[in-house]
Every structure is written in structure tokens, then in C-alpha cells.
Image (cartoon, rainbow, N blue to C red; front, side, top):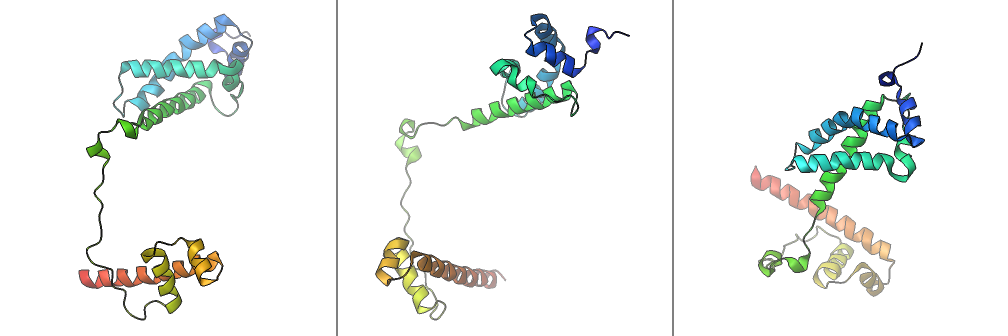
Length: 191
């Protein structure tokens, strides 16, 4: 028994498409445009997008499908999903890419007015008081070199005559002690 054109399987449709059958492409677009359009509209409905954006992205899906000699269509696996399901995934992915690109549009820093990009320098009013004996002498020295004298790890290591990893490890241990101490002070002040 012979199947009608409407009953073609996904693999039969895609095989005709990759052979360059123009009638098959026209029928494919006519048949699956509503599926693609609905998937795109569902994604774009969440944002500030209009009907023109939905139509553009829908068209981009079909362009994406036939690019590079139908590379994407050749990757369709009919045993994993129905063609309409697979097209919904492709359309959703294309629409999400569009949304990400729209969000990623950035204004060049030179194009911003000075008052928008400027930041007032903030200096601490009071120097942080670290309780005596909280840090070991070596930890206190490493913290002073890095945070008060603005040395980088390599400079501090050279000055102390140790490996830079030793300075990083000492700094890390000191920061952990400080964090625990000030978290406890904060809890006491709140409670």
C-alpha cells in the first residue's frame, strides 16, 4: 500500500530535502512553518519582541536548516524524535539565541555620558581592627604586604624569600580566619 505525500516519514522528507528537491522544500516549509512559528512565538512572547521579530526568527530557523548543504537537517535522527518535535527544539534554540544576542547588545563606554560611567572613589572611614593574636605573625605580615603595601604575590614572595604558592596559601588561611571571626562578630551583633 502506498503512502500519500502527507504521510511521509521524517526521514523520507529530509532525504528529499537534502537531494535539493525544490517541491519538497516548498511543501516542507508550508507544512512545518506553523510548528516553527509557534515555538518561536512561545520564546519571544516572554520579552519585548514584536511580530516582525517573530517572523524574522521563524525565517532564520529555515535559513539555519538549509545552511551548509542542509547540514542541520542531515543530523536529524528520526528514531529519536518526530520531525515536528525536532523542529520545535531547533526553533526554540534559534529563538533563544536571538534573545541572547539582543540582551548582549552593549553600548561602548566612549558613548556613555561621563556622569553615567563615573564612580566616586570610596575610602574606608576607619581602618579595620584585627584583634591581636587572631593571625599568626607570618599571616599578619603577608596581609600587610598585600593589602597595605599593595604588593602582588610574587613581590611579597620575593621580599620574604619564599615560594609564591606559600604566600598564596598563607593569605588564604588568614582570610579564612578573618572571615570566621567577623561572621561570628556579625552574628553576635545581630543576636
